[in-house]
Length: 489
Image 1 (cartoon, one colour):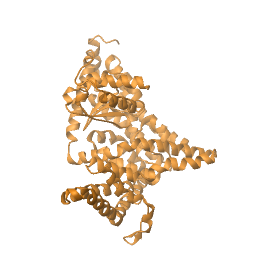
Image 2 (cartoon, one colour):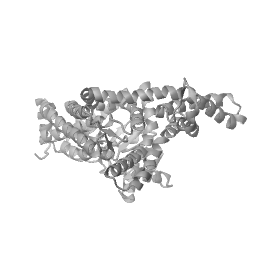
Image 3 (tube, rainbow, N blue to C red):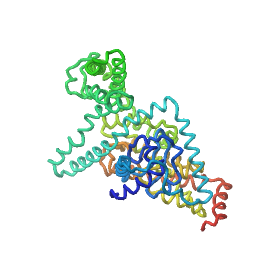
């Protein structure tokens, strides 16, 4: 998307979220613009969703506007520019919401909002808030993981073909450099998220990846550079935050600038060397062995459970616990074998949405919603389909999960048979995951397994919804309501 189009989208969004004065923070992840707002009652959600560039909205700890991977970074940059401009709109203005939708579509949108609000309220528990903060540490790393993952895939393809050996050699450090230092970035973001000095968190975490740790002996063994990985970096940086706060409370202000950083790095670094690296190394090793064992011995069951329950986990906020696990597997093994299975949940949603589209053939408004949301769903952006179609309808959400379970089982069985498929990065899903696939038999074999899983998820989600997604009364109600409103057949 060009800068002009990105600016136009940003200019359309700004008044609908309450203007510049209502925005406290602006950030983005892979697909969503994340806004910290002073007063959410000023947001015109209906008008936002009517914008062609907006694929959906999500209310969480931040107000999130789904724009898709192609647009989100550009729109975020343009919005920041608008906020810095002296003539930025300071209050709600601009076009009112769209014209009244057909009754059934409006009912579904309202029901989706209520369900989302209920899920958000359930997610406001200490454990889930802690998981959300951990997610905030890793989400900013996703663009680098994706870029390095694709470069690694390109390097592997060239090496397998025997082409450009000099380029393959050069691509090695390009793809692996970030992963070799990811602990530093995790430490930096951890300290930032939990209120410490970010560079001190990064400094303490950097001990883990320093080559000289190989000379240090702890618990009867010499340490290995990188031992403990992101788990150790997370623990070391959290310790650094607490050490910094403790020292700052005790040290006179005149000595703070010298004593606090020194104590934080000294005690935090020693704790990392003589405790955290060993413990975190054992945890990281267990994660790797556990994932490998799970697919090798229980691929079918693992695929059914993970693929079928992933969307409910997302709604409960528990999926965020998987982010450090994905990152650990990528750091250890070069890819995470869990993500391709979890991605099947989106395939079930797509198949379900197609069945809803064909079953409710008289409901023009809902069919229009599905047509606009399907391309995003194919690329792994599931919010528009989940909150606009399947979840408000009730049964179709369950049948969509059945499709995800079937697709997950397909990928899981392939892993059990020796054709495990992994992803070299986290973030993308659906068709967007193809460039990041990896496996023991090369990219083509991995792509074939993943494509088979997607097709299985599409088909199972479609069939489950077609035959079990509606009661006779519900089917008659949604078609009759639209027909009585004058919608075309």
